[in-house]
Image (tube, rainbow, N blue to C red; front, side, top):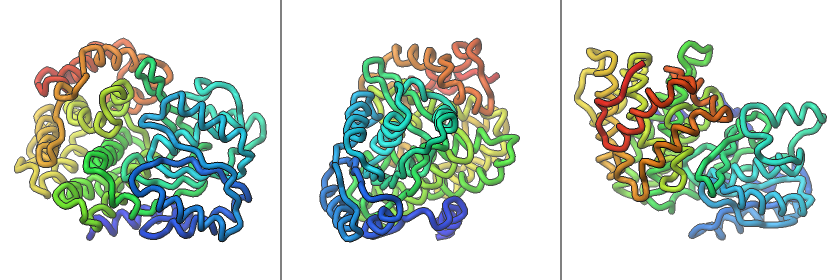
Length: 422
């Protein structure tokens, strides 16, 4: 319970009273919406049981005298450009003054980006990168429409964050907007919506939460936010390591599912305080064969070995979390450098084996060496350089092939020894 209480206290510190979360909170959406506007568009995912939850939202809006001007299907996984175009068109035609998104990260991200295009115009390429939406809003003296983002998956934390990930499926490459202007004005997370999620989705989402906490913690070295990032990482990672195996063993364990919701919200908090790095960067080039959370989870043990000499304290703390829950018997305090990285990676592998999760890219159907080539090329793209800069061992484009190449090849085979340390 200590980890749960810590997470709840951190969420209060993060969002105060502005975040509506817990069990049964969908009934309060109407009261929230009527303070924001009069006409709402609902952009929604469809999954078993979703109609029942949407009915609660509709009824709540009706009772609050908020008109629903349109209801459209959300985005597919990784938010393809085609889905963004469709949602943007519906939004432009709707005259809505409130956006209500109901879905996982892709649908919430699509809603963020669609509102950018409706209000600011242009092409989505104009906004990939950091702070370009805020710049355009400031130049024109306008703001984006209020956005009630209703999260339905314990995963990305999209309802809390400044990120919108969009994918060009023709090239299999994901890019992102990073901007405080697109943070949903009113986040909502009814934990009960997650109770029927398939185990694969639950697993990927929980491990995505670890990836957010881990990568931000690593990237916070030397910053004013370091202590906060450590606190968030310890709370979020501990919750996933403790409760994810319990949900896999018993999918009806609602207490553990609630804990995963809190854990992934810690991941959302983390990426509002700092930035992700290697695992996320590589995941953007694996969208055709892996979900986002699964790609990050596979990659992070390998990046941890590469980062190890620079993050010894951090790896000891993380390693001891895994040890506490039975995934290592190593004395992390006695290890350093590369050997410490190996031990931390092995602890992560131990959890993966417990929940029957892949340890290597080579186990993934459809993965080929072309994905490695694409990931190396993408790492050199200036639009994604924030991920390189966030690494605790920063790389420039000239070092990508020499140092990132071995990380990706190690992730293909599981051979940690071929990773080179800078």
